[in-house]
Image (cartoon, rainbow, N blue to C red; front, side):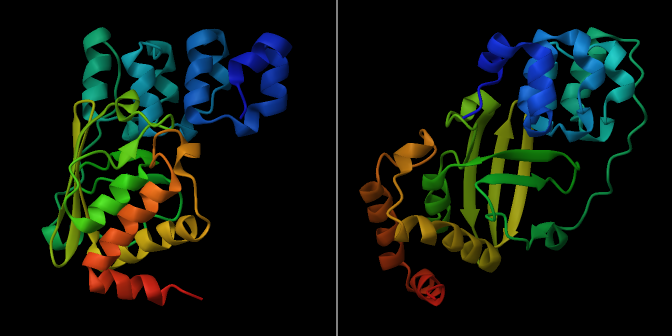
Amino acid sequence: MFNLFAHIAVSGIEATLQAHRAELTPLEWVEILFAFPERAAEIPFETWNAEAWTVAILHEAVTPTLAPSIPWQTISKANRRRLLKRWPGLQIPDIRPAARIDASSRIMRSNLFERSVFRAIEPDTGEEVSGCLKIPGVVGSLRGDWDGPFLTCGCGEPGCSGFAEQRNHLSPAFVHWSIRQYDRTFELYFDREAYELGALRLLRPKYLAKWNGSEAYNVSYPNFRAFADDLESLLAANPRLAALWKSLAP
């Protein structure tokens, strides 16, 4: 795994940016801003997600001189308030909230399990919520009894990325995620059929490969047997999911 500051310690900031600029993640760019504020003009702020901006703002790395570079539509209302409290004269463009949409239009039908990293836009506010999927949470959300994290930081600790309460609820038509991150609350609704099919497609190759969840920090189970037991128990108790699972076989 690329270690940004170990590389900088050996090669220096100039050589590191020259060799690895294209592969740096938004949070690694945040670290560069912390450590080398004089390099702010080189930072691709347009690639930062909401999590990166929140970390930078909470740790006071964002200064008024950066205001022209900030994509304000990405910044949550709470973070705009934090910046204005620190610098009352800061010029923030007028961003009108999106029109509130009706409940049926809120249901997302796209596959949110295409990768291990989840991203979605909260329809009412236009704010992004993102994080790494916690596999026990994916299985638990299919069962409908999950009251714990399904999104976490890349290190496996939800609190590291500000995730607090996370709950899910099943209805015949949709799966509802309620997520609190820092002082923001997201209410996300997913088409149940698309959600279940996408989740099983994510889980199946891990199951067939006898995936050792412990390799992914603590975003998963301690070992394959714990993962398999939980998944097999879910399928045994839910014939409809078991049929979906079998339909995915080549």
